[in-house]
Image (cartoon, rainbow, N blue to C red):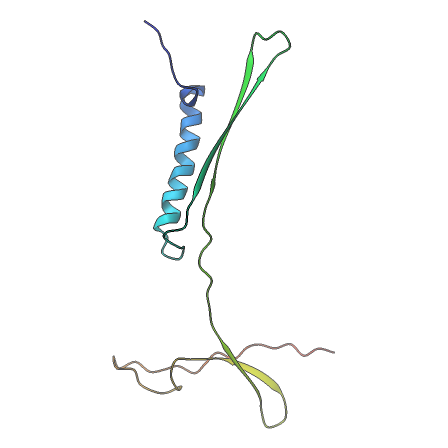
Length: 120
């Protein structure tokens, strides 16, 4: 009885395990709602075969890698202006006027002010 196996099953299944590990990362990246759902991901398996000078043995090296999608950019906007003494400032724009109530009863918070470091 022959014990034939695919090259993927060699090394006591370690090559297949590496492929499965990268595949899990891809599935997790697809499920991550902060990534673009329909963007392609890639799984690359590189198998390097190096024979010795006598062509009797072959050194096998296998790597599996994945190319994932980055998270979608976070977008905000800043409103710039100056205060009464001429100091330049910027605050994050909010969807409503600070203090205004939402339909669900919540209230618009004060906008975050950008921390600016004065240059010499």
